[in-house]
Length: 102
Image (cartoon, rainbow, N blue to C red; front, top):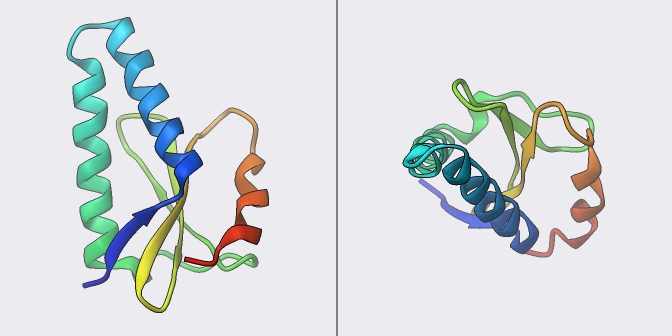
């Protein structure tokens, strides 16, 4: 099982989204974070399960929250490129692929 590495900008996205949900309803931010952890565990256990796209990334579509986790399987880790909202700014995170020197 490979370790998970999260892109710095993706970390910020995640934190901002958790704060947003917590402001909407007390406890919802924690529920969002728990759903993210569950998704990351699934990705860690079976990263190859999702098919590779043209750019080499794979996508994990979350169920409860409208987010897609974009990731790359690297030689020594699974690199999380983005925690992207499913209906906002599609593919904005693509520029991060140039910094995949993980």
